[in-house]
Image 1 (cartoon, rainbow, N blue to C red):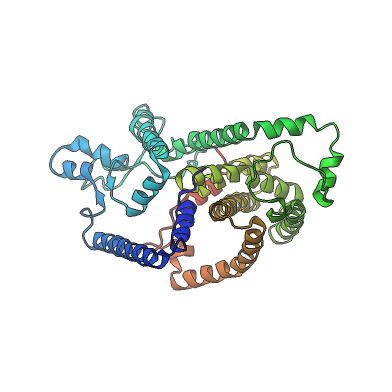
Image 2: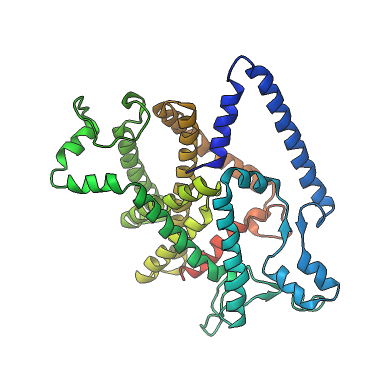
Length: 399
């Protein structure tokens, strides 16, 4: 996996400390970074005052206003040209493979599938301004609420495309991981008959043990001790079960299921971030919410506790995906710089502990300054698009 941003960070740090001319090179690169930052800042700021000129080109809307009414469909399905410096950099680091995959996925979903399901009535849109702009539709709604008579209308194309997108990412991630670890998995399967030696090596170091295939370039004394992370997992499970039971009335079995789903979906986050530098946290959370929607319905829970459990399960999956991706990205940077993994692990442990209190403080700060984040009042400076997706899943409780 490339991990574009961690790789760029590693090469930047290395170049700043390489050779006798490192200081001069560092000054030159710092100047380039400052110029790039200034250009991107001005680019983004000017777009706020002159929309549609520097960043977003709404070609379909322009042609629609000029008289070509059918061109509004380009705008409806999101076919606009967006000159985003951040994605320019991500494309440079990710390479053509990931970039072409992104482009072809967009063509397949919003150029073929979405228009087809709208044409056949399997998905619908919502008029934005039917009086002044006939035909101008929104196909991005994540709401799928039932009607008063109990029936459900067709969903939006965005809602419809969410499920195959999640499934494709899930299948690809696990197939990729399985193919990469096929030799190690086969060796583990052969040793299933006598698991005691492997279990013993977790806590007792065997100086004579040499693994059959060890691809880790770090020396054994610099690696993260196995009992470190196993102990952390056990403590995390116990604390999670205790907190979820006392604070959110969530059973032990449901908490363990949420942790397992978070572990599974974290593979998607790592795979996606490693290839494209984008972590689909929201997608992982939605997939976990789908499962728990079925769990709550199967148990016949009331609406309020079912929604609380559904939201908690999504939070588990999102947090696991975010933390796993951040940790793998940091370890990628350290690997390129030949840092000791165990030192990085300890640093991440302290950083995560501090972030627990810092994140709560930042949430209180932003919600105090802008209460619309919680109340949902509009207009709001923080639109938080993922919140609407969480809310739609919370109300629906599954597909």
